[in-house]
Image (cartoon, rainbow, N blue to C red; front, side, top):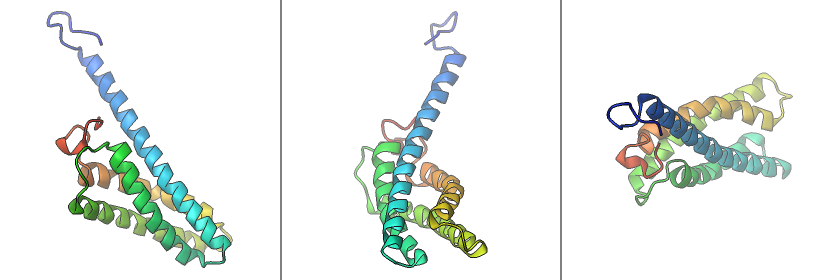
Length: 157
Protein backbone atom coordinates (compact mmCIF):
# COMPACT_ATOMS: atom_id res chain seq x y z
CA UNK A 1 0.00 0.00 0.00
CA UNK A 2 1.48 3.39 -0.89
CA UNK A 3 1.90 5.94 1.85
CA UNK A 4 1.44 9.69 1.90
CA UNK A 5 4.73 11.62 1.70
CA UNK A 6 4.72 13.21 5.16
CA UNK A 7 2.44 11.20 7.42
CA UNK A 8 3.22 7.61 6.56
CA UNK A 9 -0.55 7.13 6.26
CA UNK A 10 -2.06 5.31 3.29
CA UNK A 11 -2.47 7.60 0.29
CA UNK A 12 -5.93 8.55 -0.95
CA UNK A 13 -5.28 6.61 -4.17
CA UNK A 14 -4.40 3.45 -2.25
CA UNK A 15 -7.51 3.80 -0.11
CA UNK A 16 -9.70 4.29 -3.18
CA UNK A 17 -8.12 1.29 -4.88
CA UNK A 18 -8.68 -0.85 -1.79
CA UNK A 19 -12.37 0.22 -1.63
CA UNK A 20 -12.81 -0.60 -5.32
CA UNK A 21 -11.24 -4.03 -4.86
CA UNK A 22 -13.46 -4.64 -1.82
CA UNK A 23 -16.57 -3.58 -3.75
CA UNK A 24 -15.61 -5.83 -6.67
CA UNK A 25 -15.08 -8.78 -4.32
CA UNK A 26 -18.44 -8.13 -2.65
CA UNK A 27 -20.20 -7.87 -6.02
CA UNK A 28 -18.53 -11.10 -7.13
CA UNK A 29 -19.75 -12.91 -4.02
CA UNK A 30 -23.27 -11.56 -4.61
CA UNK A 31 -23.20 -12.79 -8.21
CA UNK A 32 -21.90 -16.22 -7.19
CA UNK A 33 -24.61 -16.60 -4.52
CA UNK A 34 -27.25 -15.31 -6.91
CA UNK A 35 -26.06 -17.70 -9.59
CA UNK A 36 -26.39 -20.60 -7.17
CA UNK A 37 -29.98 -19.54 -6.38
CA UNK A 38 -30.69 -19.02 -10.10
CA UNK A 39 -29.34 -22.48 -10.99
CA UNK A 40 -31.48 -23.99 -8.24
CA UNK A 41 -34.50 -22.11 -9.60
CA UNK A 42 -33.75 -23.23 -13.17
CA UNK A 43 -33.10 -26.86 -12.20
CA UNK A 44 -36.34 -27.15 -10.22
CA UNK A 45 -38.30 -25.40 -12.98
CA UNK A 46 -36.75 -27.65 -15.64
CA UNK A 47 -37.34 -30.82 -13.62
CA UNK A 48 -40.95 -30.02 -12.78
CA UNK A 49 -41.86 -28.95 -16.32
CA UNK A 50 -40.25 -32.15 -17.66
CA UNK A 51 -42.55 -34.05 -15.31
CA UNK A 52 -45.51 -32.27 -16.89
CA UNK A 53 -46.18 -29.68 -14.19
CA UNK A 54 -47.66 -26.44 -15.54
CA UNK A 55 -44.79 -23.93 -15.99
CA UNK A 56 -46.62 -21.28 -13.92
CA UNK A 57 -47.06 -23.63 -10.94
CA UNK A 58 -43.60 -25.10 -11.41
CA UNK A 59 -42.10 -21.64 -11.16
CA UNK A 60 -43.73 -20.97 -7.79
CA UNK A 61 -42.16 -24.12 -6.35
CA UNK A 62 -38.83 -23.28 -7.95
CA UNK A 63 -38.86 -19.78 -6.45
CA UNK A 64 -39.56 -21.09 -2.94
CA UNK A 65 -36.72 -23.61 -3.04
CA UNK A 66 -34.28 -21.17 -4.63
CA UNK A 67 -35.14 -18.59 -1.97
CA UNK A 68 -33.92 -20.82 0.84
CA UNK A 69 -30.72 -21.62 -1.07
CA UNK A 70 -30.20 -17.92 -1.77
CA UNK A 71 -30.72 -16.89 1.85
CA UNK A 72 -28.07 -19.32 3.05
CA UNK A 73 -25.62 -18.40 0.29
CA UNK A 74 -26.02 -14.65 0.80
CA UNK A 75 -25.93 -14.91 4.57
CA UNK A 76 -22.86 -17.14 4.74
CA UNK A 77 -20.89 -16.20 1.62
CA UNK A 78 -21.90 -12.80 0.21
CA UNK A 79 -22.22 -10.98 3.54
CA UNK A 80 -20.26 -13.54 5.64
CA UNK A 81 -22.29 -12.90 8.76
CA UNK A 82 -20.93 -14.17 12.03
CA UNK A 83 -24.04 -13.48 14.10
CA UNK A 84 -26.68 -16.15 14.47
CA UNK A 85 -29.64 -15.99 12.10
CA UNK A 86 -32.76 -14.46 13.58
CA UNK A 87 -36.45 -14.56 12.78
CA UNK A 88 -36.28 -10.81 12.11
CA UNK A 89 -33.49 -11.30 9.58
CA UNK A 90 -35.32 -14.14 7.85
CA UNK A 91 -38.55 -12.10 7.66
CA UNK A 92 -36.63 -9.14 6.20
CA UNK A 93 -34.88 -11.45 3.72
CA UNK A 94 -38.15 -13.14 2.79
CA UNK A 95 -39.78 -9.72 2.26
CA UNK A 96 -37.03 -8.59 -0.09
CA UNK A 97 -36.84 -11.98 -1.80
CA UNK A 98 -40.61 -12.29 -2.32
CA UNK A 99 -40.81 -8.73 -3.62
CA UNK A 100 -38.02 -9.46 -6.09
CA UNK A 101 -39.59 -12.85 -6.85
CA UNK A 102 -42.98 -11.24 -7.47
CA UNK A 103 -41.38 -8.79 -9.89
CA UNK A 104 -39.48 -11.70 -11.43
CA UNK A 105 -42.64 -13.80 -11.75
CA UNK A 106 -44.69 -10.97 -13.30
CA UNK A 107 -41.97 -10.38 -15.88
CA UNK A 108 -41.62 -14.17 -16.47
CA UNK A 109 -45.38 -14.58 -16.97
CA UNK A 110 -45.57 -11.43 -19.08
CA UNK A 111 -42.93 -12.72 -21.46
CA UNK A 112 -44.67 -16.12 -21.74
CA UNK A 113 -48.05 -14.48 -22.36
CA UNK A 114 -46.75 -11.84 -24.79
CA UNK A 115 -44.63 -14.35 -26.71
CA UNK A 116 -46.22 -17.82 -26.17
CA UNK A 117 -43.42 -19.67 -27.98
CA UNK A 118 -40.75 -18.42 -25.59
CA UNK A 119 -38.99 -21.29 -23.76
CA UNK A 120 -39.67 -21.05 -20.00
CA UNK A 121 -35.93 -20.99 -19.19
CA UNK A 122 -35.35 -17.99 -21.48
CA UNK A 123 -38.24 -16.18 -19.83
CA UNK A 124 -36.73 -17.07 -16.44
CA UNK A 125 -33.35 -15.61 -17.45
CA UNK A 126 -34.87 -12.34 -18.67
CA UNK A 127 -36.94 -11.91 -15.52
CA UNK A 128 -34.07 -12.83 -13.20
CA UNK A 129 -31.65 -10.29 -14.63
CA UNK A 130 -34.21 -7.49 -14.22
CA UNK A 131 -35.14 -8.45 -10.64
CA UNK A 132 -31.49 -8.82 -9.56
CA UNK A 133 -30.99 -5.09 -8.99
CA UNK A 134 -33.95 -4.80 -6.61
CA UNK A 135 -32.79 -7.89 -4.77
CA UNK A 136 -29.25 -6.63 -4.28
CA UNK A 137 -30.28 -3.22 -3.01
CA UNK A 138 -32.76 -4.73 -0.56
CA UNK A 139 -30.23 -7.22 0.79
CA UNK A 140 -27.30 -4.85 0.96
CA UNK A 141 -29.05 -1.94 2.61
CA UNK A 142 -32.02 -3.62 4.29
CA UNK A 143 -31.46 -7.21 5.32
CA UNK A 144 -27.77 -7.82 5.94
CA UNK A 145 -26.58 -4.27 6.50
CA UNK A 146 -24.33 -2.11 4.44
CA UNK A 147 -20.90 -3.69 3.89
CA UNK A 148 -18.53 -2.50 6.58
CA UNK A 149 -21.33 -1.96 9.08
CA UNK A 150 -21.51 -4.05 12.26
CA UNK A 151 -24.36 -6.06 10.71
CA UNK A 152 -22.27 -7.02 7.70
CA UNK A 153 -19.76 -9.33 9.36
CA UNK A 154 -16.02 -9.65 8.72
CA UNK A 155 -16.05 -9.70 4.91
CA UNK A 156 -18.46 -6.78 4.50
CA UNK A 157 -16.24 -4.76 2.22
